Structure formats: structure tokens, C-alpha cells
Image 1 (cartoon, rainbow, N blue to C red):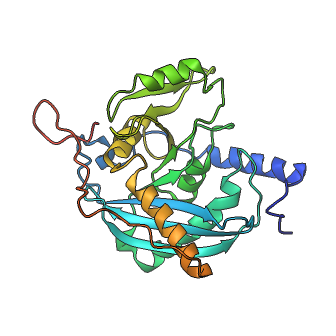
Image 2 (image 1 turned 120 degrees about the vertical axis):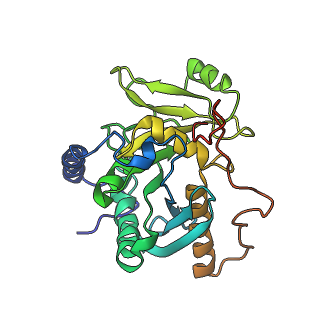
Length: 282
């Protein structure tokens, strides 16, 4: 029976979801599995994907799921697909994947079947990975089900395992002076759950990066830094633009299309190391 998207599911459903998270969590890989991840300049990485689900304003059921693939390091869109969807699960903190992942998984599977040459080598997700109540957020969920390297990128701190957006946390943020500066998110359990990253010189608000699947935290932070023309990583930003524009067109809403990428904006240049060789370390 379909769940009401606007209401809270019964405890029996939540228990089922918890068991499913625990089952899939056992399959998470939190280290680098691909050669390009271990290369200082990410040599061999050619395609980075981003996913997003945007919602129709004032509607708890209708939404748009989007997948985009960008070339790397140019960060130009080479593939995009959006579709209107009807949400069958409500939003419950800690269970976002059960609301969004089925639609994102369909988009990835469609690309894999129709244009395998454009499959992303890594997916960036607007949400958390192991930085999660039970260590298995939406980026982990999507990564395990697609069997792709996956990184969680959140705009707000999820306050779990003793992590708090308190005065000490805000002081650490203040000390992030330039693009690439970061600090670890160390939980009360003694586990580093992610990193707070200043992703752009013109933004003082950090991103919260966490491992989703098949990638180390160190490589994930380097990759996010190299994918940011603005504060938000370009694959996620483009997926958001794509989904919102699809909603506007599908519903016949007024407004002008959001510019995809300013012509004057050059591709992100990852800083060079002391040797002079191009490095992805920001």
C-alpha cells in the first residue's frame, strides 16, 4: 500500500526501513576503489554525475528527479535527464533515501542501458553519506544500489553523534579562510563522519562532505573542491537547475530559464603543487 507523502509512516514501516538500511550499510565501501581517485590530478576521471530532486511549491506529492553528467575537468554538461515523479513516501529525518532514491536509481539505470558511454564515474548527491543518524544516508544508499562511487554534499550540518552547530563549530568555520580549507567532523564516538569544507573563496558558508560509497573522505573532499565554480559543486548545481527548469516547463509556470553557466566563467583550475604539476588538492 502506498504511503501518504504528507504523513508520517507507521512504526512498522520505520522499523522495516531501519532494517533495510542496516542490511545495505554492510555493503558500503569507504576507501578508494578506482585508480583515478588516488591520482593527485584525478587523471582518468572524465565524467562526474550529479543528482537532485526538486519539489513543486505547495505540493507534497509532485516533484522532479534529475540526473546530469559533466565532463571533467571542464565541467560542461554532456548528458541530462529529468522526469516528473509522484512521491509515495513522506519526508522523515534519517530516511530521505526511501523518498528520493527510487527515482534517482531509475535515471541511473536508464542511462546505463541507453548510453553506457556517458555513465558517470562518480555521483555527487545533495545530502549526506555516512554523516547520518545510523551511518547510512542517501549518498550511501544510492551508491550501494548503483554500485558507483558516491559522495554526499550537504549545505547544513546534520547534528548527530554529538556534532552541534554551536559557538565552537562556528568559530572553526570562521577560521576557514580560503577555498579548500577544511576541518574534520569528529563525533563523540571518535569517528570522523565528514569534513566541513570552504568550497569557494567568495562563500563563507561551508559544505559538509561525507563518504557515500567506494571513495575515501580525503579523495571526496579533493574532488568536491575541484568541482566548484561556485559554492555548490557544479554537477549538483546543474542537476538542481535542470530539475527546476523541467518543473517550470511541465507546469507552464512563468519565469525565465536559469542561466546554466556564465560564458565568462572558466573551468575550475585545481591548484598546482610545489613541483608545478597539476594537483587536485585544493
